[in-house]
Structures are given as structure tokens and as C-alpha cells.
Amino acid sequence: MHGRGWWVAMLPLAMAACGDGTTSAADDGGTDADADEADGDVPFPTTFWRCPGDPGCPAETPSSFEVGVGVRLANPTITEPMTVDVDGDGEYDPRDGDQYQDTNGNGRFDGVWIAGFGNPRPANDIHDDIEVRTLAIRSGEKLLAIVTADIVGLFYDDVEALRRSVADLGIDYLLVAASHNHEGPDTIGIWGLDEVTCGADPAYMEFLLAQMEQATRDAVADLRPARVRYGRTIPGEHPTKGIANVVSDARDPVILDPYLTVLGFQDAADGSTIATLVHFTSHAEYSSDEINSLTADYVHALRVGIEEGVTEGPVDVPGVGGTAVFVQGPLGSQIGPGRVQCTGLDGVDLPHDVLRSIEGAQEVGRILAVGALRALSEATAPEDTLDLAWVRARFDLVVENYAYHAMLLNKTFRDREIHGYDPTLPLESGNFPHLWSEVSWIKLGRAQVLTFGGEPCPELFLGGYDGRYTPDVWPIVAPDQPHPPDLTRAPGPPYLFDRLEGADYPMAWGLTNDMLGYMIPAYDYFVDELQPYVEDAFGDHYEETNSIGPNGWPTIERTVLEMLERRP
Image (tube, rainbow, N blue to C red; front, side, top):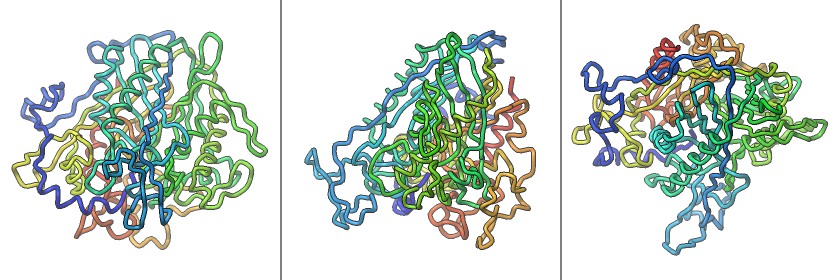
């Protein structure tokens, strides 16, 4: 989650906020978890749902399964573009002489604000579509829906609203997975016209959720008998650089999840492709912080390449058809283009300014598509069954980040629900806002998935402190790092992927069912002593300023471990 400087002006407002829109534990929706709170043992206890195992989800051994897909466009309407950008930085600043088209004549710039980097960055046009894609899977009586979107993220409240809107479809578990697109419309709120104005347009958010609903309905209506193949590869399509050709880690220790994983779903009747579920880990921000076009970034070219094929230079790989559905991985610690020096499929090196452009983003997408197509060509033989199971947990998080307090209480974070906070008392430890969030474990046949509502660092799942997931082109810790992570304090095994017993294809999906910011290992969590969450701590500690707080990851990890103990 990129955005700097805007929260400094917000902090004084938190103390003055009246707290309108907050809810107490007694009136936040009447869910099962709320009923549990009445027992007095734990203020905000975790609620688990298990399938199979819970009433209404009995164990079964289905002999076949079905898959369906739905695709809808989610482009916002741009009525007021920026017409003059004097310094070409992509940001609207009237002090520079920047100008905009005041279409409605109200004297205010009613732009479509792009979610990423500095603000305000208005959208002037659409390079390629912002899309919503849903993959529905039915195995026996269990129905799972995976909704994906080319957006920066979505709050848990929105996911719950979407679930209510499709309750008539009989979906047992619905997830929303965002690509964390920093070149799409602001759906969180922090990239608005100024530091105190929410950048997420309520009308667009209503439209977005409606498109998600329709894509889900389309996917369920499209369900048909299917077969599945599993594949995994390390992409990059370069003989020496490998994964470092397309992605890097900007925070030490340098540890990357190098794998691109695919699940290829074929029509059981004719063998044609229904869908390809593709998982990879990297910020969707290759198109840079200076463009004023909406784009799905590398994800667009990755999907198109899987479906239609890639022809470039000596590369000529046919596509597999169907619908490609992308899910994001654990991209905390700035997993993305930061240190990348990319060589294109034609063998030509991309200059840095080309890599950080729409052209460069599309090239990275094509490189990843070639890797995905290779993984599909080497995938396992088609299988007629897919065992579905899951455990999901709704849990409570205390928000210790002072900047987040301001944005929650002043509704820069839209109208996100908070609880456990008394607005008549001082905002201090013991009276901080709390959020509900969700994690889950999902079994998709031979694949297993852990989902998280934020940006976890890859090492939280992989380990890798011994350097096994560090590309040769970079040291695991830079020798000139002023405040290097103390790897002797890093946690040892077993790591979370080690706990996914029997998983041939383990995955972590970030930005799924919530938007919580960065998740950082406790041993390397540092905030500035004088201005925590406003200034970075000494060294390389930007991510802490966009995190829930020091108890964020420990709380999430405890919940995950308890969740894994409840697996069917």
C-alpha cells in the first residue's frame, strides 16, 4: 500500500473526531461472533466456520465437480480529467499551475483518483479495462466462489455486503481477492484530492459491488462438469536472472516467493479450457507513479497471454483459451519492480524508464504469461475430482497505528466499521479502535491456500532466512544497510507452508477479504520513537507506517495456527 505524507495532516483530526459511525460490540450486526461476545470470557472472540464439519456441511466423497466463470467490466466514468500537468509528475497541484476540466461547473475537481503512490493522481483515460472475474467451483454439495478484481483492495465490510447480495445462490463460501492494483481507482479512500478527503467515490463503490455480484451470478449459472490440472514454475524467462528478471524485494531480508502456480480447469465433455487460476506475487505497479491512465498493470497482459498466447521475438507460444483468473500472493516488503533490471522476450534489456511504464508492465505480464503457459504444458494429467474443504476465521484486531485512527475516525477509510472504542473517552491504549477481519485455509484438491486481508511478507510463509529464496543477483541483506534485520532473531521452522501437510501446491493469497496494510515479522518491526507511524524508523522500515501495529501479525498468526488445528 503506497502513499506517503498525507497522514501527517490527519493526526490532529483524530482527537477531535466525534466518532460518528462507530459501533459497539453489542450492535455491530448480530452475527454468531457477536452472540459469542456475551459470554464475558473474551471481549471479541474469534468465530470459526469449518466445511466439512459444521452442521449443514457434511463430509462427502464426490465423484466429479463443476466449474463456471463470470467476467464483468468495472471501469469508472471519467468526466473531469486533468488538462495541464506542468511538471509532468502525474499529480494535480494547482500551485504548479495544473488545471482540470470542470465539467459540472461546481469549482471542485471531481476526478477519478488513482490508488497508489502520491495523491492526488487523477485518471484521464483508460488504457485497458478494470475487470471483475469470478471463478465458481462446486464439488458435491459444496459451492465456492472466488471473486477477483483489478483494484487496490476491498474492506471486509464490503465483502460481507457482497455475500449478502448473493445469498440466494447458495454459495457456501465467497472470497474477494484484489490484485492490489496501484493503477486502478481508489477503493480505500487515502488517495483523494487532499489529505482529509476520501478518494473513493460512493457511486463507483456501489457500481463495483454490483459488477462483482453479477460476475458471481454469471459464474454460478455457467457451472459445468470439469477436470483439473496442476502446474507450477519459476517464471522470468531468462537463463541467468530467473525470477529476478521480473520481480524484486525492496526491503531486507530479500526473500521472494518465486513460484507461479496454475490450476487449469477443462470442460469434462470436450477438453476445452474453462478457466485458468493463476497465482503470482508482485505489486501491480509497474506502470509507474506518473501515469494518468487506468490499467490493470501486468495482470492484464498476463491474462491475455494465457488466453490468446504470446508472440514476441523468438517466442511464439499459443494460448489455452478460456478465462484467466489472477490471485495475488504475499507481497509485503515491497515485492515488485523496485530493483528489477528486466530483459524482454526479444532479448533486449528494458531501460528503467521503460520498465516503469505501461509498456514495461505489459512486457512483464507477457513474460509471466509465457511462464504460466509453460506450467500448463507441464501440468499434471487431468483429474476428474477436486476435494473442496475450508476453515475460515472471523477475528478481532486492535488498531495501534495513530495515522489509521485518524483515517478511521474521519472516514478517509470510507465508512469502515470499527468497534471496541468509546468516543467519549481519550484515544489511548486500552481505548483504541478495533476491526473485524478474516483469514482462511482452503483445500483445492492437491492445492492448499492460506488467505489474508493485507500484504504479508513472503518469509512469513516460506522462511528462507538461510538464503534459499534469495536470487543470486542480490544479497539477502545489503552490506550498507544502516539498520539491518538481525536474522539471528528471525523465527525458525516450522513456517506456515510447512504446516500445510499434504499440499503439493501451497499458496498464500494476499489482499483477500480485507485491506489491512503490511504484515511484518515481529523480530524486525520498528517504529520511530518520536513520531511512530508518521516517520519511518531508522533504516528500512517504511512498511510499519502502513501496518495495523506491532500486535497485528502476532494476532493474525495465532488465529491462523488455531484455524489450522480445526482443519477437517
